[in-house]
Length: 205
Image (tube, rainbow, N blue to C red; front, top):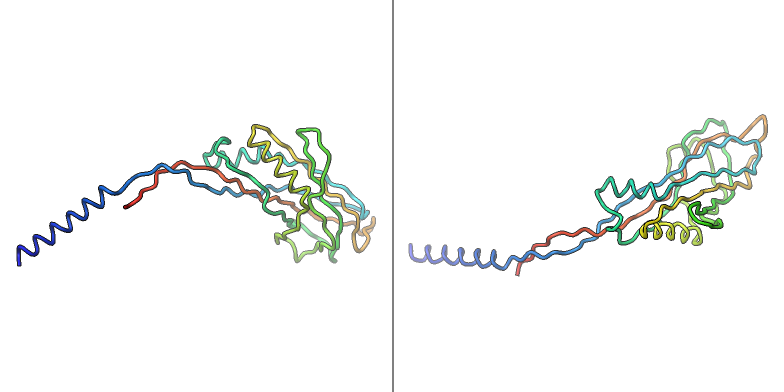
């Protein structure tokens, strides 16, 4: 019986040693996804339904911050692209709702460029019920392509800046001197950056 036990123990030891010897370390690059909301704030106070509000998104600086926060260099970026857009009402003090319609245009400021449509919005309701609620919007392909090109230029070494311009064309009910539309809101672009990370992968054979 002792011989059987010793033989079994020896076999177990052989298998363990063989397993350790067949464990190989392989260098491999894995993909890591970094996410960031890039938001711009707008304070609206108007007595007309037609108004325009511009703001500058320093996309290059935003991406630099994202990389710095995650200890990643620009050279490690494999791809970067716009995923979605949303808005959120931050402050609202009226006793009634407003329905808005218009467009959000995007334009490059770091190069000679012309604006493209990023979002067309119709019947967006601004009310107390929407305060703090992030609502997604449908994006126009021309504007998406412009933002994605800006990120490609960032990867290539550029420092893109985007001008976001809200061009509102309709408000219901009509605002007036006695009843101006007055609220604060935020428009966000959700971006993903794909980076490559060198790591060691253990493989058992």
